[in-house]
Image 1: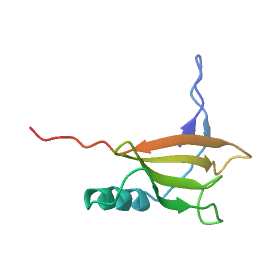
Image 2 (image 1 turned 30 degrees about the horizontal axis):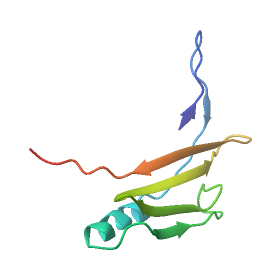
Image 3 (image 1 turned 180 degrees about the horizontal axis):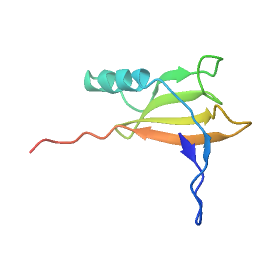
Amino acid sequence: EVFDKDTFSRDDPMGYAEFDIHPFIEAVEMKANGVPCNEIHKKLVPNRQNCYAEESCIKCVEGKIIQDLCLRLRNVECGEVEIQLEWINIKSV
């Protein structure tokens, strides 16, 4: 969900977007199984069933799995939000 930031009143909803995290998790698992880096693992294209405003690629860059997304907001006249996902391994102590 996306909200505006108001100083003197309640923040207003500006829409929402959804995306499937499974392709990103699959790319993380592929990297763990030795798939080479510095290449695109998967391309996701916009369609009527998702919120993608443009093609989104899941790629390995310098050993990190990254996905840049531009998502079209729903329940609003118009609007988009851009986000980047990056997998970070947390080492247990």
